[in-house]
Length: 172
Ligand SMILES: Cc1cc2nc3c(=O)[nH]c(=O)nc-3n(C[C@H](O)[C@H](O)[C@H](O)COP(=O)(O)O)c2cc1C
Image (cartoon, rainbow, N blue to C red; front, side, top):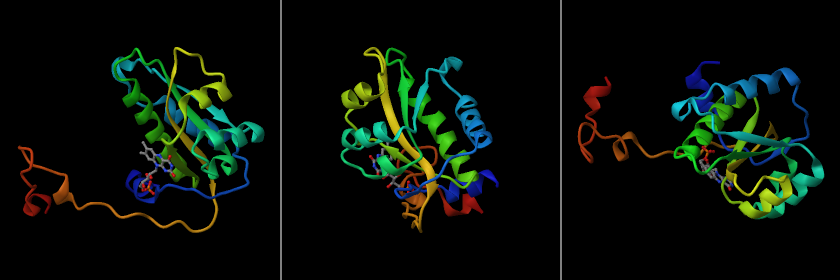
């Protein structure tokens, strides 16, 4: 699959089939995290992959009762050292790589920002000095999912100066 196809195919998946992920796919997905760029190549990221059913059940409560947290194959917590300036960016790039690699392999993901950090940390044993930056659900999609719309280029892409629209001729 080309990168542009993976980008187009990725969408948030909130219904998951019961499935296990072959280890070669997990290795490919871990590689996508590992290969991400990071500030000063600091690789200031750690990821807790939670497949344990009881822990996922408890995580539903820590994630605003979002039920798909309990049915995804892995709940992923993105953990970083918050004393590093770019920690949120680094984690986000790595997990973005992950979402595209997952789409390429036919899997689904959903970012989870609605979580209670202290509760997630307690359930997963994340040390006090670390931050859970963002979480993600991952697994095999179930059923049909509909892609959401996006703003047109003219709403957010400018040329040379803030607010100056990109001329349509420049794209031809
Ligand atoms: C930082 C961030 C936090 C998000 N938190 C949640 C969340 O807690 N629950 C959820 O269902 N979706 C969450 N989403 C997914 C967005 O709702 C979704 O990406 C957006 O609606 C666009 O839809 P799409 O991903 O299908 O293209 C989050 C996305 C991002 C980037």
